[in-house]
Image 1 (cartoon, rainbow, N blue to C red):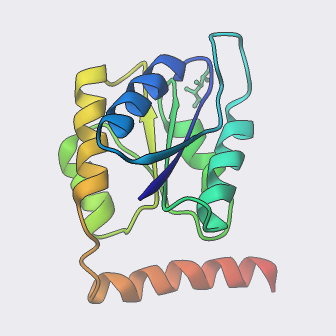
Image 2: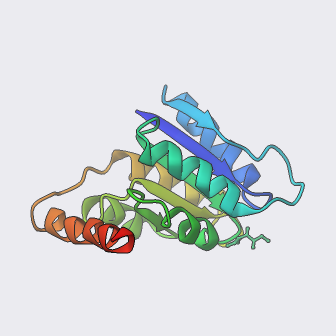
Image 3: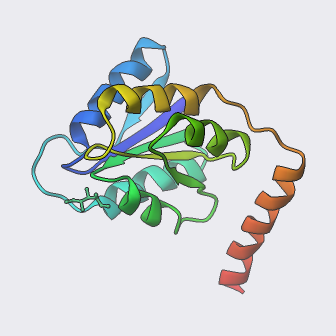
Amino acid sequence: MRVALGADHAGVHLKDAVRSLLESRGIEVQDFGTADETSVDYPDYAARVGRAVAGGEADRGILACGTGLGMAIAANKIDGVRAAPVVDLESAHLSREHNDANVLALGARVTSADTALKIVATFLDTPFAGGRHQRRLDKIAALEHDRHA
Ligand code: RB5
């Protein structure tokens, strides 16, 4: 599995902790920054990670900002991205099982690092259930079509 990472200044330390977890699991990481706490704009990082996932250069993306919300809102503007802002383990599980989320958005100001790393592990390890859920994802993809019609 190849995972693209991105964060703004609020999420940079959590992003680095996620990177360590991924590397300890032998996962290939593409780190799109940011590198320190200098203030930056989260849509720039959501775009880089979202494009890597939508373009097939990464299998999953993980984003971190203060709440996870801005990152998810921005990443979901990219066709093919299904970004889930997640703060608990049950939602992490269901984001994969039901929504086939391909991008996880974490909030460093609202989620402890310990919980966030458990969310990451759940996000990576939970398969998509398919079946009726695939039909719903197809309807989401059709909305992207409508937008470009
Ligand atoms: C940055 O201050 C903050 O707005 C950002 O990290 C994020 O929480 C946005 O959703």
